[in-house]
Image: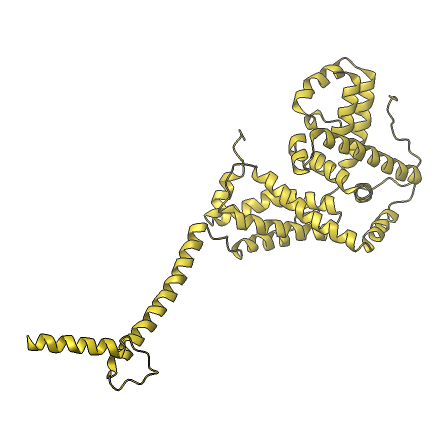
Length: 197
Length: 145
């Protein structure tokens, strides 16, 4: 690793029990963790639980953190991913109300002749993300929303960059299809297709 | 860069070249500058999805959650280091050692304070009778000398 870890100094201060450093770490990382967990799980409450559990791990490891193998932010993504995997596994073992709740959100979208409000657009996008297979959703969340490099995202997912690109392409195609379907159903708008200007 | 390669990358990484692999960006810009129709169409399609992706709102970090997380920092004990655990272990061992030494000293004092001839067979003593007689014998020989 050539570049210094941008979080190393903050971690050292947390290790010295500086209250300001604790606040700074929460401000710096909480929105990012919530976004990652929220988009992977599609559930804000569960995302908050995951964020709290992740921070407990930060506090435990801050004093003894050694920059070496991985950047702190990458390690943190791994922590959140593992916590999300656990929850997704539990859901598969107990499949029930989540899909129904999602359909309620979709059904609550505006009537066909109304423009989609920001909240409805967000809900529609959430439904599209939720419709993706887990690995495709993970790929698009890490690469697009978390803005990780292709190498970082592939490493976190334990796959090659080529496999990541394949997942991303399929994810984007599925999202386009899902959104186009729901837009056609809602307003009959035409989605731009390749080859047309 | 071929138009096919551009389409492949736009399909994977979206319309913002900042999200593309760094080594591909310059070639992609060149192709766009040439107004390649396939590249432009791929970019337009990718931009449509990017715009939709941007509408998604992530959960907000509300002040209550932030306070709870900050408070959790002070309720969490950091894991002890190896040397600290080692010191703790030695300290516990020291306590046990002192306790055992005390018991042994007590037994020694108790056994020595009892008259040897009156010591019942079941009472533990650091000296058995044979050794006592030997020592008494030595004392008497020294006295004669």
